[in-house]
Image (tube, rainbow, N blue to C red; front, side):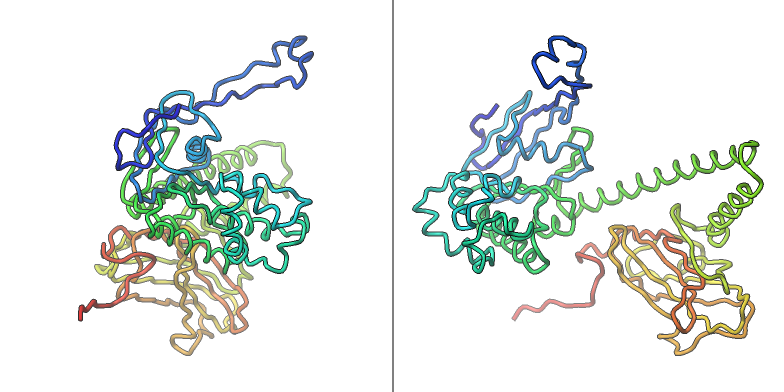
Length: 446
């Protein structure tokens, strides 16, 4: 149920809210079906929210994050009154606008201009108000050339542009946003993102649901982490986002380990049984050998390392060392990192070039370096050897990173390539920088 807020400084107050859905096993669609076969109406209650409580102050930007199905979008829909809680109270102070179901109420046979009036009326905007804002809405959508065409002729991107332009031009006190920042092309996405930041700067209260934690860190002051229907954590945006990423990575690695054990047990049973041919057993052993070779190459091997290449040369040992010369995968920003790479060449005529790349756990490519570009030379005529790469000061901020390694020839043919060979963790950073890496800088007041 909805009530008035208790604290006038709050825009939203959520108190002990519960929400469940009825999940039917095989629900009849007709009355006759429901009467004749009553067993088809059996259902179970799926409890999505199990008593959450939080406040959002006026002018505050708060993000709801969590795994799919944790209840964050359900919470947002209850704030918009699309859904009602089964228990608890929700109180809001001020006019609410939502960017949840973009384009709700659009009629495909009407023009973009006509649909602006229809969609605006859903938000409670009177026709005179729309007349006053019409030019701004059309200009923001960048659809001037198509505004008098039926929206059924619009592309999906154009459709979403128009809907966003209408919703964002509502004078509201509270704005609710659910995973709709990927609207249109990159330039328009940036425009929408900047518009949200502008609305926040003007004092609008924003509640945002998004899996894009980079955007969350830029827009939001605070993050609420929902897990299994409960609030697991609530606090400063950057800290909660980093903790959430660490937890997601930990759970991902645990799932990979469980799957790897299940696969190994299945393959072992297949080899010990008489159900497959000798040729199939040979192929399975070769597959196992190739997969295990990543672990043989690197004692620090990550759980989802994968290997490919033509095989004229191979990695035989890769190890990452700290400043003390000891193997380690945990570092702090500014630490010295040494990577020793041993190789064996089966074709010594090849000109071998070694490359190392670093990718963050959210798949942002952070850094790459080629031996040939740095030294001007490659390796040939050697059956084996060692290459050492030294990073004097690790310029990465806190997070998990994947290290990839390549051996290529002068034509950039992959001879041996191992993705995600090592998972490197930056546990401590400067505490003063944001984003991906620190930069030397100074502030001066004049």
